[in-house]
Length: 148
Image (cartoon, rainbow, N blue to C red):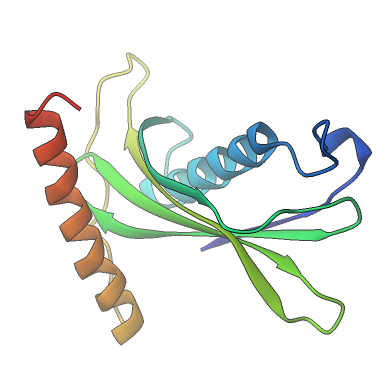
């Protein structure tokens, strides 16, 4: 699990005074990459797919933004990484901003996929996330077969 925190400042805002979606997408990709690097035990990982990037709440200047990422599924060379994004209120409560699923692939120095360690599942919550990830994997395969 990796957690990244940002204080939203003027330079992160779009013309409507909200967090620029592209900035959030960059931070989500960074967290997904770090999670994948840590799991694969290599600094060579690439983003293969982005699934389900949903913006649920606006983020404004002065907000504290928290991104939490963790591996939910591991194949031979690929990993699904879930990244949940929240705004953190002064009392510590968090409100959901975004949930995204990235497929990351570990590669060697020649950009060829390499095998990654198995996922160790130790809690019921991890088991549930892994089962949901398997369903998403099946849906991704179906979309590829249908040309999406």
